[in-house]
Length: 347
Image (tube, rainbow, N blue to C red; front, side):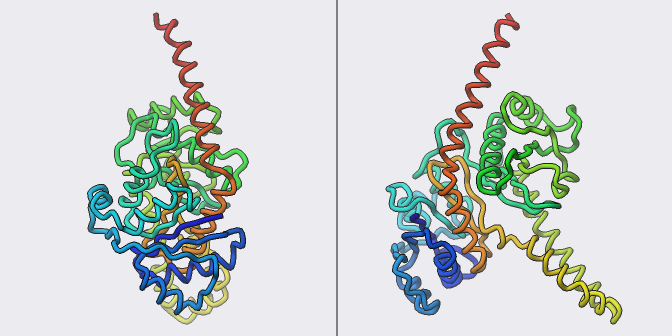
């Protein structure tokens, strides 16, 4: 198994990414080569600090970095020696089977779309983010790659999210829903109503509309929406989790009795913190590309990098892209057959 890691562009620098890569190498013996892509001198110093002498590590020098200030498409075309561009090229030429990056999301999507192209039958790649629910987790797709979508795009997101949920997260028959402002059929807008109609014509385990109240209650395994709405939902959820933790800390320290209660409940608080910690989920795959690309959080620490590499390894093992290609093709065939049946009736 060969995986490339873009070590530049994260909030905490190259050293944290290298430390995470070291943890991943210790955890995943099936990795045969781990490419570290970035400024060679910085990587060598980070490896020395981490005391990482693993023979599976290969350094690939890249002199440039896509920053958060860069306009994604223009920067990818201009900065041809950027670390994410070099990492994606390793994937294109078969040297790597997956890429992980903590960098500029728009830049990662732009570089991947330009270099890798899309899977057959997929119109738009989409970011699939894992979020905690009452009894496990659910997939939010799209979490930020596409601000403007058509109904067919949402159907494709639903299929890709379902495959990922089944193969990587282990949900045997994932429940799929379209995010809306209510569960009744007349709710939503033109986009969501047509997307629901399309989803109902497929083999998806489709539950219809889901609303905000449903997301964290274990009613659904895959939540489908456009990237504009999905990104707002993701960031609002992360901000709320941080705010609630801050509120709890303040209130539990308010007086001695609460402090005693907090000490008694320490184990429960630690368990909740682990479930809410985005680092535990590692990274978000960008599904629909002709290659495996995992976007790790810009603020990812060592454990998040290790887990992102683990996500990449599981995605390779389960041949997720092949399954997405097959199920998208089947869905398109079914939609075409349904349309052929409807046309004579209309005539």
